[in-house]
Length: 377
Image 1 (cartoon, rainbow, N blue to C red):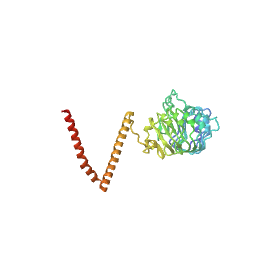
Image 2 (spheres, helix red, strand yellow; image 1 turned 45 degrees about the vertical axis):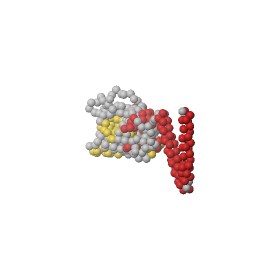
Image 3 (cartoon, helix red, strand yellow; image 1 turned 60 degrees about the vertical axis):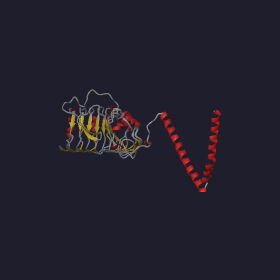
Image 4 (spheres, rainbow, N blue to C red; image 1 turned 90 degrees about the horizontal axis):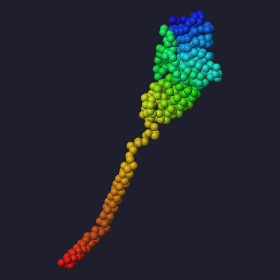
């Protein structure tokens, strides 16, 4: 379908439960003036060419659970006023022209049941909305609801959304009631990642990639026990990778590439399953799986030996050293003295001494032996 949406479409909302106009060629502004009260539970306008701001009359949809206006040309600031909707669970406004900072100065708009929020591919600026992370109570609840999928009681229709999960865009043709995700990627957010994110312990997907975030990776992210995908690539993060992330035993995808991280990569558990691509563009990182070894590991470590073997080895080495030193010194001294005697003619003296003295000693020895024999006779 193409063209503009009729102004009267909102009049059906008094009995309408699902309005799905996704993947068409509709354009123009959103003229809906939803009546009060209404029973609208799901509004899907994804993949059209709608322009202008979101209609404030959406605050009349007190039963609204799913709002998907992704992949349009909507030009607006963050719709904080949607936080008043008590049943809103899914908010997708990705790939539009939303802009400006997300104001967290008021606590009146709390999104009490929101568990899927996708703000990616917009023009948001400023700091991450840390106060909203405190409000997201549904992302802190580990209990499993009675229904397995949203709209499980409706056999003719199931909500579906497109999410970026584990590095790929995936269409969820049915939305699990326990699925939780935050995607703020591809914007212009600045500042540090708030520690309060670590309190969202039922979060499955967290994506802050392609922003201008600074500071360290908070160790509190290690408390996200259900996390399966973590992407904080293409930012300006510094420091070491927290060892607390080793406790994320469900983590299947990790992307820390293109930051300014340094130091050793944590080892063991899930970290043994991640490849080089998880750390690309961080020249200061070292250790497995990178080919760059850490300084502490560059010295070769010999296998341990017993104390007795060490003593025997030391003794053998000491003994051989003495023998070699003595042999070398004696040989050198002997060659020196021998050469000296031949040069000054002293060998003649030793020859004469041997010719004169040696016969005398032999004669004396014979007499001594003869006298001893005669006495015995």
